[in-house]
Length: 578
Image 1 (cartoon, rainbow, N blue to C red):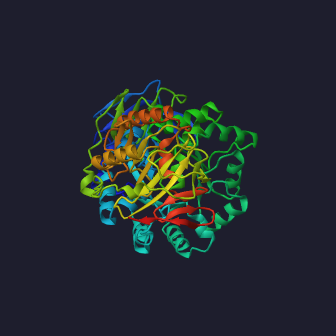
Image 2: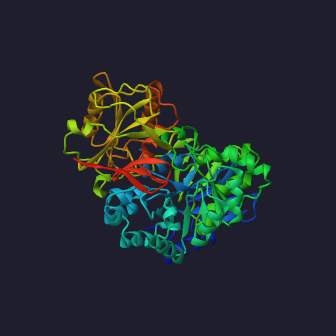
Image 3: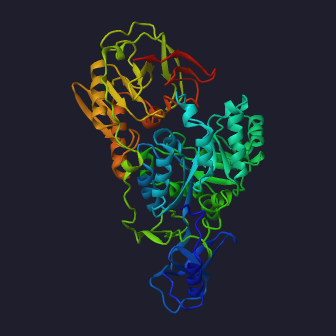
């Protein structure tokens, strides 16, 4: 059951009242607490009584007895942090990400459901949502309106009944993100219908409007968009505020913009933060090594945001925006007992974390509070690649290829030499590129410029379409990498000189690891180091892989339908049936 629909039974409420009357002992008392009172927007001192998973009293009184008392003298207490925009599948999974985030104070997460829609049947996806609700954090979800790429079965995945079922689900609190908003402008009434249904259910709609003009933002507001996380300048922030939108300030692995945004906001005299939240926007694992929401709070304070405003952007503002301040974002009676205990307000990484009344970290020591998840039972199994790579699969005759402009932006690139040989000998930073259907039905063959100068064989099942990406200068090593991905049942593999030199197994549908988050960080750091040594010029290979097939960014992509022109919304060269 979702926390939002959670209702304490009459008997439990009577027990909570009995605690106030002195007839029952609180489960926990945080004594001598200096805490953030969000309604009054000030630091107060008092005692916080907790009964099981709920705050039942905040004030000067102390109970006659309590099951546990923690003296918080000299400490500062704030609400558990809320991450409003999570992509919980960046080779990690929702359970491991939430466990890692919670240790750093983020106890409420609003998650993207895209990979659930693409990888799982609806019934199993909903069962998995229910299973994840057993974790000692609060998890909520979005409902996507489009696939963020061109897929063959989009009409089935995003059938009206499927989308409507997600929108009606008690754990879904918003629609979006609106990566497909150009279709909306072009007259997609089905998307508009879903947006209307979202609004009718009193749920939010999250935008995705990079570079949008003021007029476009106005249209999006009229369509029903409530907020957006794509501000890249202070002026972008101003335009969204002018249109009444909630502005989520982003600091992510591909857009570490928070310091720049705050500096430019200051130049524009934008110093009112009540309509702002903070997000790491689905960071790659290594980006999280020095924190998540706690890191963003620290950056905000260091850049002149008053501490209370910084903590509100990470808690109270998000709770009010999602209409769940009755449970989250505030230290007051009736709220879930999700609380961070800090050294002081200038050190937002907590020493102790309480989530729904459960200690996740206590005096710096992590508690083993997260139950395991039987992923296979819900449909996240190893990829079953029961077909062989054929010689024809590595034949190249495309008249143009893809050139990387940065981590995620790609443009067309002419191929001026025959690429039919075993090795690619043209430009130093140009390689073969193949996208293969994971069921072996089709392929698209082209070249990629700007990915690396000396990668012989690279294969990945991690992509936004869940298909197989091959990159390299040697067809033999590309085969070797592919065959290892096949043996693993999904993963990322780098091969050269007759051997596999690095691999990241992704046994959960080929897109997620089942290993602890810290292990995934180590694996990704090693991959990045190896690729950098081989000429990868950017910061985030995980996002480069994810967005090769994503059609919400310019200019050209490879998709299950073929080489795709994003701006013209046309297939330039179709996929080849195997």
